[in-house]
Image (cartoon, rainbow, N blue to C red):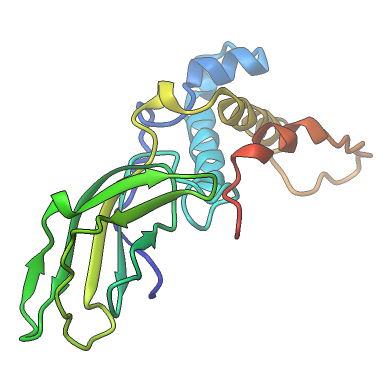
Length: 199
């Protein structure tokens, strides 16, 4: 199994992000429109910090498309590396003559268990012999929550807290001042149950 490839990255535009500028300003009690560009950048940064396979959560927050490739057919099922998965766009393979073919969508189903999304091939599915190459099997799928409203509230609240922290502490160091750092353990607790578990 090779590393998954992102074929359509998420659009980190304001209308796609988990929280709005207005929600962030209300959370920070900051009503000045002059800070809107800064707040947008911070919401985007906080979202990117959590989003995707390499994000802190290891899940897809915004809509994105991935391709998973393998050298041969799996034994009955194929675990997908990121959740949530909305649809399987296609499962393609290179046949014995190295020509690209597409598997009938009726030959497999998409499920999700406590580990994450999984493609299960039906017992009646006939998986043809694949050409010998590292990317002989290619699964393209759409991941991410359907829209902003579908993103869990604890994740949104965590983003608001990250934005507020960035807004209040814009510099790494402050010369000539004493800084009291207060840990907020509840911030990480909010998203603990949403982190992708490694099994």
